[in-house]
Image 1 (cartoon, rainbow, N blue to C red):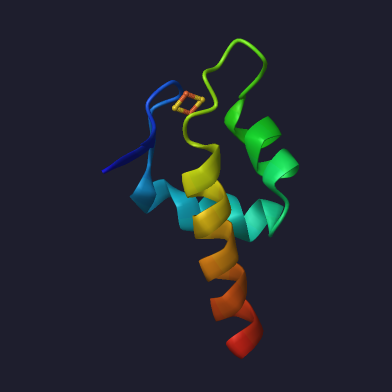
Image 2: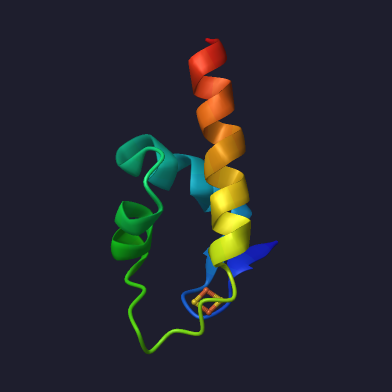
Amino acid sequence: MYVCLCKGLREAEFPALASCHGSCLEAMKRAMGLDDSCCGRCEERLEDMIRSCSGCLTKK
Ligand code: FES
């Protein structure tokens, strides 16, 4: 399932990105190559995924 249609990011690719860029949405967006020309529709979903991933990491 795609998270970001503009950059073609799939949900399955998210854990690798998150492990490199942690819980910072801005760092994640830079890593994905998102800029002002992108629509930004995926931001809310990314924030949710970052929150749930951070929760998993702090529980370990
Ligand atoms: S869907 Fe991610 S920037 Fe457009």
